[in-house]
Image (cartoon, rainbow, N blue to C red):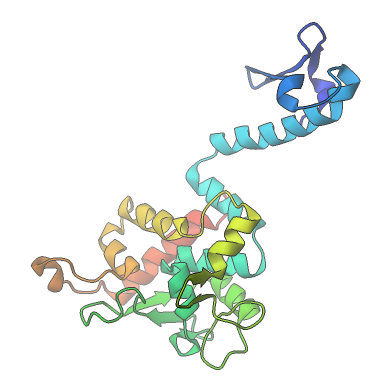
Length: 243
């Protein structure tokens, strides 16, 4: 990571200048918010500014796949588990909160579910997901002691629960508190968008576990299990396997 020693101080303009990959970046003492507009007085703040700026620049140069891969590599514990369930199984916070142990076979590496949001609709498909090794490991790590729910909060309460006045979403709250750059609900869309632009485009609706929306959709047949498994392995290769 670049340091201030590699930057130029312009005393007459009270600013630092950095050349990086052919682009000149400038930051003034006013922008740094320092009280002493001198080289020594602003050195530490400028060093921190460049550290963050460099990360921002590198992120903009990455492909979306690389950004997701790097982001997942930084997640641990429950947050990693929730993110992987979004990518691997298209699950939202509500889906994760309602996931029951009876729906998951960690030995076989399968997760079978219908979406909670549309669970009352008899036409909603039941989807059998092949779990990635990383997802299985994360589930084992976070497996709850609850007799029914697969995942709970640290104190054993449901991850999403409703009261007369409000809904408490522990996943969204944890994500917001950590100020993570990719929202949790984005993972479902990231995977579905990737599938739409892939050789497995015809399994996208099945991945999302959508209920039929038209007469044509009501005659929909689930893709062959082997092909759907291949699509999920393709997603794993796209987002988890380092290039």
